[in-house]
Amino acid sequence: MTAFGASLRYEFRMQVRKRSVWIVPALTLVLFVLIGGSLLRDLFDPGERPLDPRTAVAGLAVQLHALLSIGFGCLLADRLVRDDRLGVAPVLDATPASPAARLSGKYLGAAAATAVPIAVAYFGFAAAYAIDTGRPVAMAWATAAFGVVIVPGLLLVAAFALAVPMIMPAPLFRVLFVGYWLWGNLVPPETMPTLSRTLFHPLGGYPLDALFDFHGIDGEDTWAGPIAGATWNVLRPAPTPALAWLSIALLLTVSAAALAGGHALRVRRIR
Amino acid sequence: MTLWGYEARRTGWAAVLGPPLAVALGAAAALAHPEPSDTTIARILLGGLEMAVPLAAAVVCSSLIGRDPARELQLAAPTPYRVTLLRRMAVVVGWAAVVATLTAAALIVTGWWARWPQSHGALAGQLTWLAPTVGLSGLGFAAGAVLRSPAAAGAIVTTVWAVQQFFAGAVQQHLPGRLLYLFATTRGATPGDWTANRLTLLGVGAVLIAFALVLLGRRPERLISEEDE
Image 1 (cartoon, rainbow over the protein chains, first blue to last red):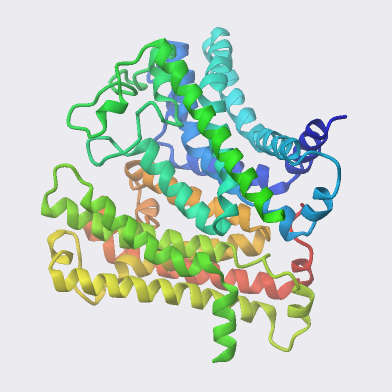
Image 2: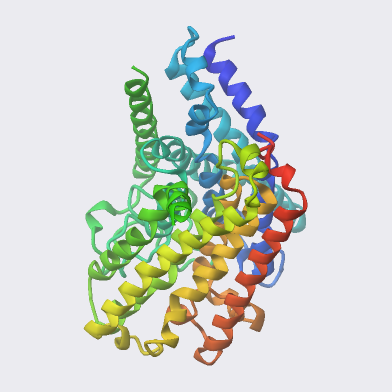
């Protein structure tokens, strides 16, 4: 087995068995249901829910992605620095396995494991909606939304969660990350300069608009394209499917760059 | 004094940098507003105190349990480990309080404090940052005691904070939600509930800290093993 495959498998199994990886999203969902004023309740109310299953599962993706990604990032923030703290990093560095392959395996394995509860929650709600409305096509849309909206965002969060704690304490990363998540995803662009709803939008504004024709649950929101009165509109061109794919590629490129930065930093430190 | 100095160093850089960075980012957000009016700037400045400072303090409090490399030694020392942890929490919250009080003083002197209509007097108004800081830090400390994992406890604190940001309206539709709402000064739905809300947050924070101390005292040996990793 290659070093990449072995570390992916090991990291996945270690992370997926952690209690907290399941407890944190479960508590988040309990809180989400308790608040009640959300889409979840509407999805199962025949009078309130969107008629189009595509809009319903895209809306569900936005809400779960916005909420569960915070715990996802915080849980992953100790993964890379932990090897140094526990003293296993020098042992692993002494093996012939390439550090880059081990890091990629750790990244994908730990991220996939931490994303399992998110996938369970998302597909669980989507399946309940599909059964409740008798529209199995909702599951196909949910799979597509998970792939092009949730996965790129989570890959970005995971890359920064692994790399940034190399240069600052993990708690500080968690504070700055949740601040960024709010600022770069949910702040209305007309209130302050923000990356929210630009091409660099981890919540996936461009794919949602151009690939899912999603304009909010009520059809009244702008998820991509220029916004009147907002700064940085140069980063918000009119949405097209090509720009949606470009936006996804941008998220993946920045993720790879963050990971490469973390790797370069580690290599320099162990020399 | 040496002991307090040592505990202050053990809390780490995040505890030192967090609150000033929180205030700085709040001020930057206020300055960056494209169509500034005095009310919105004052609101964002107060928001930095009410939202960012408590978050910074609480995430550090949630990371206190589970970071000592030699917990066996701590557990064998004459000072109970939970007292040591409480002392470190006092250092974190105390430093956040120093930064917040200085910022509040600066805002009061420059007049920005009074420009937000829902602000309160110089003395009672300090509850703007004190109540959410104690409430959220208590939650972080208790979550740390239950889960013994800084990652999980930090995730719970940041999630609770973010949920109250995302669903500000929905959270405050009923009285329990309004009483537990962290941002009642800058995003409060009912100004009449402010004092009750602040006292509830302080009370909840105190109860959660007490709960964590009881839990840490009952089975301290659990602290030796880290969370199931």
